[in-house]
Length: 458
Ligand code: HEM
Image (tube, rainbow, N blue to C red):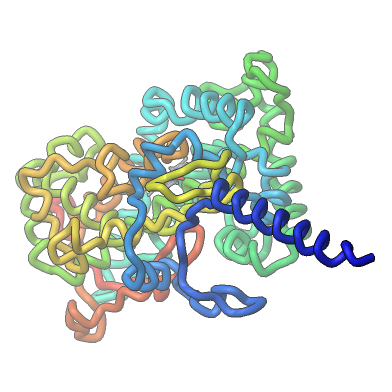
């Protein structure tokens, strides 16, 4: 009995020593964040525009990582996406590209999409459709501009043109908002988080099933192939290296709709905003268009490569207004980066908004200054890590080429065909730049302006 206490004490000391040794051996440094609150953690630190809040927080911490670390050095580890409840329902169990987990399925699907849907050849096959649709919008604006000083909702015009371009490319015909749901495409997509996801996925599924049925019935009578036709060809050819059925087609169609509609319209809206806020830049761009295109005709896609100032204006617009400011990635395995341990399954949010407004990289980062790109070789295609509108690495945007053409063409056409003025004597500096964080971060308030047709072929 007398030995019990000394024995217990010895066991305790040995155990404590063993634990201490273990801890020293396994001690891992984890990156430290701001202090959280019990239960809610850091939720109270995030508001309506989380990319602004993360930037504010980042300023209070010591910088540990650059975007390059995750998107280049450790791209092979962070190329996955975290679980996403909405995509589970809407994209048939994350079978889409945007939110698909990294792995053989995602790799094959991405290869199929880049080869068959987003290749240069496919993009070019839609060139005349794009020209017609852009001309239709210009004509409708021109008719409205005939009425003396009419105020037009440019945001609505751009978003409806972008929806038409996407529907024609993906489905082969235009769909009105009501075809999907009485509240319209944009509302349905944006309500995704608040509305019952099951209801929403049913609305989408019925819509996509109907479209696939129509395509199956009319296949032999077609000359040009939209995305649905191409996907049906792939399904029948057995060329995919994985099981490929209607669910996969629907998941990709869903992706193309979501990815192409908002992401193309949003930068156009922002670039027009900045041009209205900076009339001297608008004038300089119009002058370039006059010299290269002339006032006798509209802009053609083949003109774009000669429009150097347009290229700078678009770059600067994409820099200042990150379309997808916070993009989620997930670690596929444990890793040590900058001597800190990052666990498998950790979520990384790349704040493109912060990168593109970093004062250590950009002088006067809050200002719209296209001239900053004069003589600069900085590119937007993911090679230069200070400007990443399309991301970089394995998960970078596969629709980049198409996105650039659409944005450049529509901006050029709107600026070339019209002089623009703000309504009610509003001064350029009074035009707001409030953001509405979402799948694509667009203007909070619609952009309205007064067009005056300026070409000679009235
Ligand atoms: C100017 C227009 C566009 C911008 C600014 C843009 C931007 C982006 C960004 C930032 C990402 C995420 C990159 C990352 O995870 O690091 C992305 C992904 C994606 N984009 Fe785009 N995009 C545009 C147009 C398009 C178009 C027109 C399409 C297709 C028709 C498209 C299809 C996709 C897809 C499928 C993904 C997911 C890729 C993956 O996770 O593997 N995008 N885009």
